[in-house]
Image 1: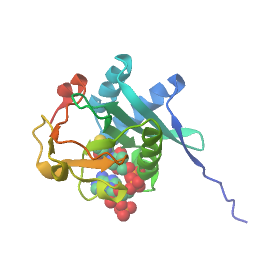
Image 2: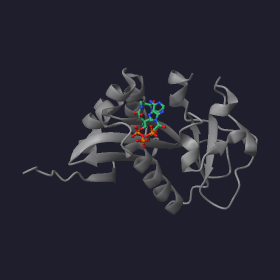
Image 3: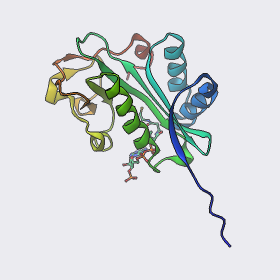
Length: 172
Ligand SMILES: CC(C)(COP(=O)(O)OP(=O)(O)OC[C@H]1O[C@@H](n2cnc3c(N)ncnc32)[C@H](O)[C@@H]1OP(=O)(O)O)[C@@H](O)C(=O)NCCC(=O)NCCS
């Protein structure tokens, strides 16, 4: 007889007890300490807009962070970083983190989410080129990597998207 082990994914707001696991997920997903250290610094500086963890059978296997973008009259969040443990990638965990994050942010009155990410991955969540809205970032990345997802009916106003200063330490 085959044992069937039920696997249950739950997406939750990060709590202090998750901090070591969040650090490990980021270190293992990115294969370096940069993003994990950035998350720790942003947390210490009180810069989280929303930090979610993905728990699979109570093991933390994924993490996503949203921070407030500065310099806009609208409420705009930056998605970065996002990480899923290598053994658990391509199983829909990253997608669940993004979709749940959007629900929380919409409830909190955010107008849009901005990401610097892959154009083949993010459009499935409603991201479109930032150029459609006339937005830019101070970072030196090709324009097609700047994507924006609307959460409210208020279109994103054109302008430069300013990340929290802590991101400058890891800027591309
Ligand atoms: C990016 C990441 C968070 C996605 O999480 P995930 O749980 O694997 O994503 P999902 O299972 O929801 O989505 C899978 C889809 O994402 C895309 N995808 C995921 N990882 C990818 C990768 N490394 N390269 C290219 N596409 C990738 C694929 O199109 C895949 O679709 P498929 O199932 O048809 O192959 C995860 O791969 C990761 O931690 N990567 C390392 C860290 C990183 O680069 N983070 C993003 C920048 S902040």
